Image (cartoon, rainbow, N blue to C red):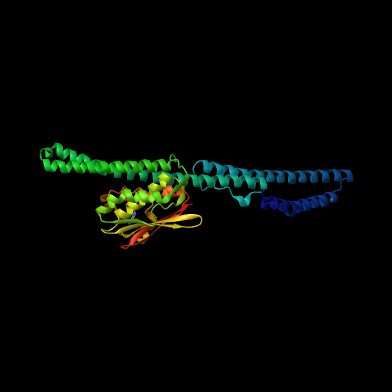
Length: 357
Ligand code: ADP
């Protein structure tokens, strides 16, 4: 609770009464008295007139003062009500003037209205931002879905228009349509993952698991993809090494898969991807280092955003959905695991994270 000195308005009223009204009434009363005593009426009449005039003047002074005080005490509440009305009408910048509040009660009421206005302003700004993000997301989703669907439609229509009769062409077109259905499938499962994470539907199941097992499994599952570009996949995990970390095994596995897939996709032929694990007393730092194309300095901080791609054409041509790292970010944040990216254009990229032991 706030304690305040006597508010300026009350001080003003008292000062006015003492230094303006009171001297004026005193002077008038004195003049009247002098005038009456000069009259040749008897003493009791003089006293009667004098008392009546004095009473009248005092009554007038008191009446004016009461009215003034009344107006002054109403004013702040009118100001507060006006501010509240404006805020509820959508003018969230409206505020009750704290500096003119005459009492600590009015000050507190004004403060409460102002803090409500602050909150309403922030909430509305946040809602507008969410709405913008949501419509941007919907726009991106429709754009991403439209590309493979149009391709499939195009190939099927060409086939129906006669290409079906040509064995070579029809095979090529069916293969391309099939490729696009696979792309749709990947996109949909990424979309389902991200919407589950963002809506809080994805429950994480925390337990201890062997990180080296996950790394070995991931390397095994990506071997085929890597050998197509003659990329070497290695890790510092020794055979049968046990490195227990705490987290959701499946989701952290997905994180390592997504990062390693990128390290392969954005690599050069005959490049390499190394998974380095550094054991520390409380945690383990996992570094996934590639010898790929790298990321421009100014775009490094944006690669974890949904649908952000450094080179959209290259991403699509290697089957990217633009959602892989956004999923990684969400999962690592849910684990309160610090993560980051280091990269040099043309030399390679390192994505690192720190997991609890
Ligand atoms: P995508 O499906 O396009 O790969 P991601 O969310 O996984 O989407 O990654 C976002 C973008 O970040 C990619 O399009 C790519 O431009 C860039 N990127 C991610 N990882 C790497 C990497 N290891 N090397 C170079 N660029 C990368």
